[in-house]
Each structure stands twice: as C-alpha cells, then as structure tokens.
Amino acid sequence: MESIEELAPQKPSGESFLVASLKAAVRPIGVVALALLIGMGIILYTQENPFIAYQNLLIAPFQSWDTFSNVLFYAIPLVLTGLATLVSFRANVFNIGTEGQLQLGALVTAWGALTFSGLPAVVLVPFIIALGALAGMIWSGIAGWMRAYLGATELVSTLMMSYIAIDITTYFVTPGGPLAGPGGATNLIPLKAQFPTIGNELLHWGIIVPILAVIAVYLLLYRTPLGYEIRMVGANPSFALFGGVPVPRVILATSLITGILAGVAGAVQVMGFAHQYATSFTDPQWGWTGVTVALLARLEPIGVVVAALLYALLEEGTQLMQNNTNVDHNIIGVVQGLIILFVTAQIAVAWLRRRRASATPAVEAA
Picture 1 (cartoon, one colour):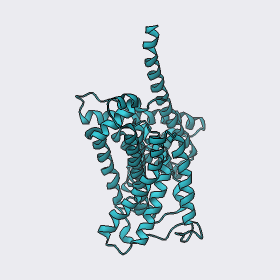
Picture 2 (cartoon, rainbow, N blue to C red):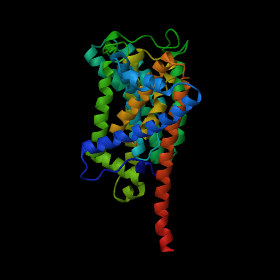
Picture 3 (cartoon, rainbow, N blue to C red):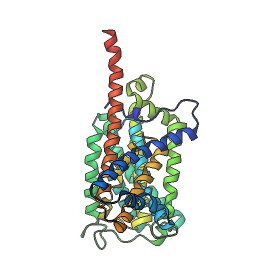
C-alpha cells in the first residue's frame, strides 16, 4: 500500500464544515449497519428473535441516562486512540503502537499522581495528564525517529514496542515491582487527582478531554501549515519532498502527536475509570480498537467520534442483550469482525484503484 491518504475523503474547496461532517458521520454508520444486517441473519440461524436482540443492542442503551452515559463512557478512550491513529495514518505513517503508548501513559500518570500528591488539585490534574502525554510521546517518538531518519519500518517497530511497553508496565505493578500495590496494580491515586463522575459511577468529567482533542486535531489538519504538510506527505511523500516539505520532520512530528494523544487516553482512563494502573488495563485493548475506529471513520476527526460511539453502543448493548435475551453475546464479536473486514476491503479497493490509475498512463504510452 503506497498511501492510505486516499481512504480519507478529499474536501472540495467550497464544501462547508457541516457537509463534510455529515459525510464523515454517514460512512461509519453505513459500514456498521451492513455488519449488523449480516449479524441479524446469524441470529435467525440460531433460531432466536433478532428484533428483540437488536432492540436490546441498539435501542435500549438510549432509554435511560444510566445506559446512555455508559455508551459515552466507553467511547472516551476510543475517540482519543482513534484520533492518535488518524494523525499518523494521514501522514502515511502506519503507527499501530497506540496500545503500548496508552499503557505507558497510564502507568506514568498513576506514578505522578502518587508521587506528587502534595500538589493542589488545580496543578496536579493538568500536571499528571501532561506526564502521561509525555510518556506516550517519547515512546512513539522513538519509532517515529527510526522511520524518519533510519528508514525503519514503523509497522513492525511500533508493534514490537507495544509489547515491550506492556511488559514494562506489567513488571512495575506485579508483586515486587517498584510501583506494586495490592492485586497486580498500583495504589489508588488520591481523590483530588480523580475526575468527578457525572450522574453515575462510570461517566466522568474526563469526557471533556476527547471533545477538546477532536477540535484540536481538526484544526491541526485543516487550519495549520503542519496539517497541510501532514496531508501532503500522506498523499504523495515524493511530491511533498520535491515541493519543499521536510518529510522526515513531518513524520517525526506526527509520531509525537500520536503518542501524546495515546498517552492522554491512558491518563484519562486512570483518572476517570480505574483510579490506579493495573495489569487488567491491557484487556479492553483500547489502543488496538482505536486503529479500527480511525479506519472506520475514513481518517476524519468527526467520523472518529461517530465510529467510537458506534463501538461503544455495541459494548453497552451487548451487556443488555446478554442480560435480557438468550442470544449468544459472541455474535457481536462476529459483527465487530465483519466491521474490520469491511474496513479492510475499503482500503484494498482504494489501493487497487490507485494502482490501476497509475498503470493506465504507462499502458497508453506503450
């Protein structure tokens, strides 16, 4: 694959922000709807009622604030990791190491909250978020530097570094580790370092962070010189270099931004969800899912919000469906697998079209 930028829709110069946002929102909905339609056929095959199952999956989460707030809660880390993947992929940098960057960001955030607990809350909260961002940035920056200046394949290096990061964090919190508390986790961070909840025990004020991140990434991509350079490098790095764009510097910059967003995702999960870092942080796989969210959103910031909410809706709806019906909850795993399959198919089709278009002039010349 020469470039993944083709997957992102190109905005006509006169297209309004509202129209572009609507287009970015509709595409992930269509992909999920197709996967759910196939899932309905599977449920019918198991001789269960798909309408009751989907009522619990898709409608019940909206019928009370508690269930809907859970959807918002599940979406928080997915928006951040989706944005992290989006930024790097827009520059044609296949950074798939957001999981490891998130884990290190979470661990360093917990360490900072415990170590600097004497600071007032107004200083402590932004300080430990910055620590998490810094940890993710450094870890991602290593792979970015190797890609930019040594030509190392980031697809391999970021993947391997994720597993290294997970091993490091596990060592720190397992019994005998430097930050080990009870039960394979750090001690609980102080109350003043925790995000207050909104209405129930899950949703918290950390939801403001992904909202700000979406705005920041949109402005970065479409309102700054660096964003223009990122999109140029993603579309055609050779042409960008010929046009005076410092391609290695742009690649490194996107890797650093990716790590910042992933590290912040880890910080938010520590401060708003677990209130400690634990080895169980690797189970939800927020970083890996963020890759799917970004691709499902076709690398558009508004689309990331929609795709993350759809994934979160499936998460909460699956719990309700499992509690209220006899439908096997693993069917939702099939639906999620179909979503990944369809997204992959979109990328493959875009690549084939690009290759066919580049081959056509050569054939005509012959």
